[in-house]
Image (cartoon, rainbow, N blue to C red; front, side, top):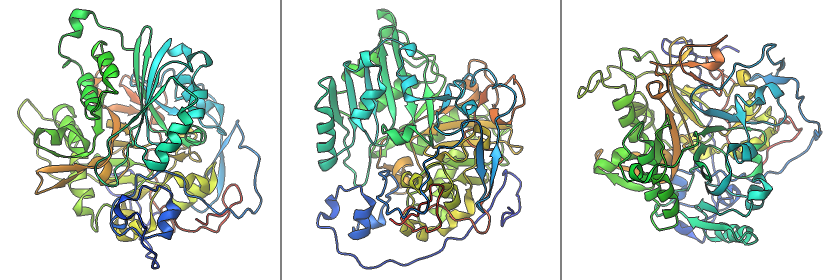
Amino acid sequence: MESRLAERPGQCSSGSTPGKAGGGQGKPVCKYGNQCYRKNPMHFQEYAHPDRDNKDTAEIEMQPPVTKKAKTESTSMPSTSASTSTSSDGTTAEIKPPASSPASGVSSPLFYLTKVRGIPDYYNNPNMATGIKDILSPSMGELVASAQFNYMFDIPWLMQQYPESKRNMPLLIVHGEQREGLIRLKTEAKPFPNIKLFQAKLEIMFGTHHSKMMLIAYKEGMRVVIHTANLIAKDWDQKTQGVWISPVFHQLTSAAASQTSAEGTGFKQDLLDYLQAYGGTALNEWKQRLKEHDLSSARVRLIASVPGAHTGANMHKWGHLKLRKVLLQHGPPSSSVDEHWPVVGQFSSIGSLGPSSQQWLSSEWLLSLSTNGRKEAGAAVTMRKYPNLQLVFPTVENVRNSLEGYMAGGSIPYALKTAQKQPYLNDYLCHWKADSTGRSRAAPHIKTYMRVSPDCSKLAWFLVTSANLSKAAWGALEKKGTQLKIRSYEIGVLYLPSDQETPGSSFAVKSALSGESTEPQILAPFDIPLTGYAKEDKPWIWDAKYFKPDSKGNMWTP
């Protein structure tokens, strides 16, 4: 399908579709006003929230209720020996796994996708995919305690994912639930005396506890897992998710434990700072564990967000300014990565970004993601020109033809009212297409950001994170650039080629390789080069109505 825009230098492909405006109707004002705690999108369709309607609601991941009008409800599962790729016009083509076996190892960076039910087994092989039971398996270590940080929890389901012999081990649940959600969580936790709940502080309106992390203590050490999935069954079933699994971190000697931890990538201190930001005492035990373990084998850098109006040095500890700082200090220089290397962002939710791209997207945010490293100590590099920006977000057809059908769209929040205010965003959008990983029909809940070479064979860096495309997640500068306002908790890990066991100047894109590489490799979760939106393509809008039957024979009428 031909895109509306011709391919431009410095990007793999491009396309755009202007947004289509629509109107709204008057609604009664919610009686809770600014204190409304509801997450159900139907509530926001029925009642007006004057303040919230003008704020960023991208972090709401709760699936909206849907009136499903079945045509021919399909109960058959997709084949496990072949998959299909669906184009924007709805035509499908069979994809067969390659005849050769997968290359050994995902690469030195421990990045995985989650297993997906209904795709060929080849694409769920342990070299590239993992599941929550695999992560919690005894083969990973003899678990003695764990902490789960997340946005959504189904505690009875979560307990079933632990080995039966470990379901009575101490488990700390770090969450952001309030009011009705908190009551539900306490009710679910009541049958499990080993579970303790810790409520994260959310003092800035419309913020969420969106981080997704596991801390796992073993008899032989501990491990950190940072991922993109909620702790509910559907997020680990037929969606595309990303996971970083650390090596086992072993305990330090008492003398080494008392020393400062500035070695390596600074991962240990950054994680301690992140846990410290929660306040209270509930995380003291885990902070002490971290201090007593050697985390120097973590070959990633932590990029996190915590709520607050950050000023001074704290501005550069969090959000997109933390990424800017790390890339400036440790990223590849402009001599090897110039403006012809596009910035690619991929996410499952879009917030309110402002009436023009210059307000945030293509100004402060793109500046952070396009920062180059210093050529030499003390000499910062000034960029002459911004690189192209390409954003991967599912079209309506991507969602309609997914394994879950329209129901997948309940986890891809982009509101009509928000989309109408920022039609410029469509000029940056590209399809979700992942034939190389067998996941074109596994709707993305993963969030990744990267800098791609002009020939699409290399990555300057790679970030997997909980952060969607929103100011709430990444932060926005205020007060003439002296304050970074962040509303939500987020966490992710940045892979830099120079941090790997065998350092390099770039990562090789694993899906683009025909064999082994002397460079460190990264498994790209989607197809590179990208496929730009064609004229008829529209981004998925989760509160719009779609009457064309999906892969299950259903319509979407929220």
